Length: 219
Image (tube, rainbow, N blue to C red):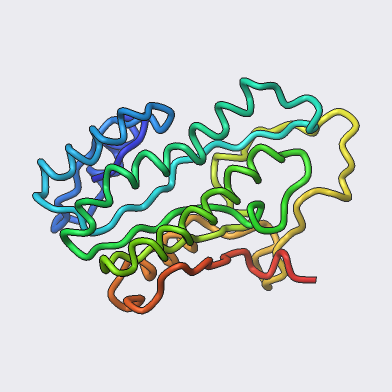
């Protein structure tokens, strides 16, 4: 079950899935708390059970800390952090029934911090802490919880951002150190990591924070 606000994108993704796929889509706004329960209900109605949840909704914005308004803060946390809370709260009873698992998508910003995006980093750090906490609390129920922390990845989420006035370029995100990846990773690199964590190959992995950043944050 693919879920997003972009319904045309969802339709395209489902239509491009392999013929053997039973992929379906559902309109979903991560900022809508009630929509999370509706999404889970849609998935159960379509497939009868829930085995894996991937919390991948997110936004990114940059601003000098003193210029982050209350509305900016509220929106960032609503979409990047509260949506994870609401979706997992609705999904966990079904994951208990299936001994399933959840993979959240945080960021290396939640580990190391990031200049000019303190609200983003705070939300991602919250995801990491929440994921670890759920791994402990629901481990006895047989549910695994893991998080992936990407570094710089070539997606649309950060495209088109303009330099801030009076920004210090020396504080910006460092490039990956992996040969051939000077411009960052690709979405497929994250998809592979998520797929592995969600699979039975990772059946003894829970509460982990998997960094996927091409050694960007080392040194």
